Figure 1 (cartoon, rainbow, N blue to C red):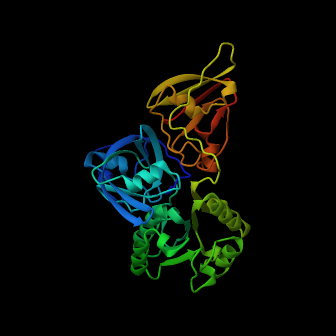
Figure 2 (spheres, rainbow, N blue to C red):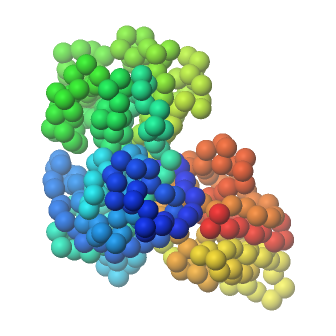
Figure 3 (cartoon, rainbow, N blue to C red):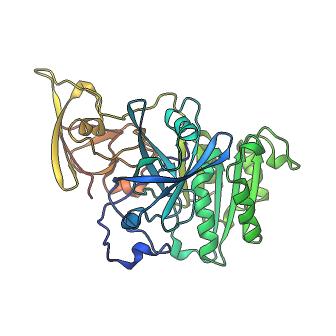
Length: 391
């Protein structure tokens, strides 16, 4: 997947009379995630197994699709009679009238395979308003040095970030380490070369190929701890870096996080995003699975608020059901995308009661401290739990 975001969003109603709605440089207003049906304007082949999909955003929805670089979109489509949702990162700097994502075909991936082979210009898809916190403060870019480390389709959010960081400030710098198997697997190869030509002094671009030799041994082979430490000693000096953005499979992201922290990089300066958790199993969660409450079963009561309306659902203790799954049984419009603890779309605030989260690859520590949970991973531990999706 192009990138499931480890971030979240708050809710707000966009003022359609606000001039910032039509200003591509204006900061987007936070909003509650919701789907809108958009037309596909173009499907462009990037590599043999990846495409860039551009959606047309009509004027009346422009405010709903303002976004910060690094955010993502959840897409919803019915394929072979089954509703599927997947999240993909936005790959272009903000542009009026359109928004683009890159979709790499996953082995066995129903949605990504369909998008790569069947999706055409003119098709219409449900697209959720942009979400995620895998981004930087755009108003304080002067003299900043930002480093991105990406693998495969993990380049997608970093394309938008690199473009925006370099365009917004004449004194900002961006270093990108991008690893792929071979040169044929490099997504956005031409765009990266153009960006390097445009900002030769402020963009450092390092392609690492794991199955193809390069002139430099440092840029050949798989990135392991030894190679990463050599990079930090020779081409990237951590002391001169303000922010780190990591995007790729779980193993690479975790390796980078651990190594950076071992050389005294503050965890608060490291942002990361996964396109897979690396786990062999995966919560589908496309619809609430059937749960039957038997006579005499001990139950939890879950109350949730969505779009100003409250609903209550009962779940058996022995079902070990997530809040999301339970909520979907009574409100099919509850927001979610990956249902695996990665994208953050199902984020809500815990108002009362207690829960345990099985996984969390999306929420920042400060969000957890403020009471936010991922409802796809949260299981009640008290008789009653109240959550609010609107906060």
